[in-house]
Image (tube, rainbow, N blue to C red; front, side, top):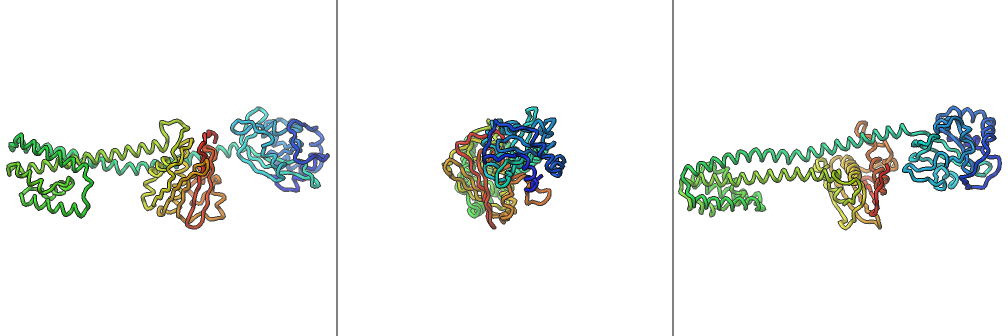
Length: 501
């Protein structure tokens, strides 16, 4: 880039031979073409050579915004056959008249003319320029004011086509998204594994319990149990089953003591498998007095088989409950994931910020559960915001995942929400080592990372910034010191969301 003030002064010397009033931009005026370029080329051979050899587009404008010179690369990048086609043209109207989202770009707001308005250079990389055929391309440009003898005479603009850079950045962002999806998939698989394994074990044991229960039925029938005895036993089974399902359970010490009492009763009545039966009966909090009543209602030779039948009833019921609980856990996780990704919902919706954060915590639970305490300080009166829910959840994921990594998997993650005027504010804080002060201003830059090579693309926080600012119309900042890092996200409560990137 040509940034040397002396060179710019040489270039701009030929722009204007008559003094002009400062800060005057006339978007309709034009100036004669040929004299300016003749003055430029003839005035300094070094300048001419530099202009013709550089690959960046360079043009100058006077205080009316009209082109006074341009180099061949400028004409080529803009799709013109010669420089002469640009000279005298109002450059904003010609190549910079529309914003990236298609809205008109008033010349009064054009950041190229910041050089006029503020007498300082500017660098912009989020706008587009238009070619001769009407097509646009993403551009990065630098605009610098030029003065002669203390008089502002215009500005010089250097620009490049960054289409390829944007393509590479987008590919890397997609890579980052896929990496994030991989983390979520791994987390979901990990979270699903526990209830799925539990459901599988319980289902397998339930099959065994039902087979044993059927055998106990057959045994009692063969032993000649009578109808009223069956009715009494079935009534007890129903009572014990309900108690097992609804009882809050005994403490470990209480359960151990009660199991010893049951085992003593079973041994006293010469019942086989007393240890297994005692551990089963204790789950239903069966009392010795209840067993006495059962023994009194049955012939002695039926007692062993009857108690075994009751135990298999209780056991089968408990195992069925375990299957239901585990499968419900799987269902809840799937629903949380659907909620997290906003599957089956409109792209733009009113979102409960807390629900999105909680879904994210669930998805990342396999990493948080290793040694991170999550502290929630929620303002439950916080109104909903209208955003792209799945993208906002991606922002929460990237911030929280970074915090987990920063803390090395152990520490405290504090999430607080509150209202600031018409903004919903979310603060996500960790008690990790903090971010060095000298790099804090760069953490949202694309491709900037403090992680080791291969551990990150440097786009995680850039993605967060783009989601919050471009997609949610919000703001994000970070403050950090040793022992604390806080990311603050503010989203307009009445935000209507945007679809531009």
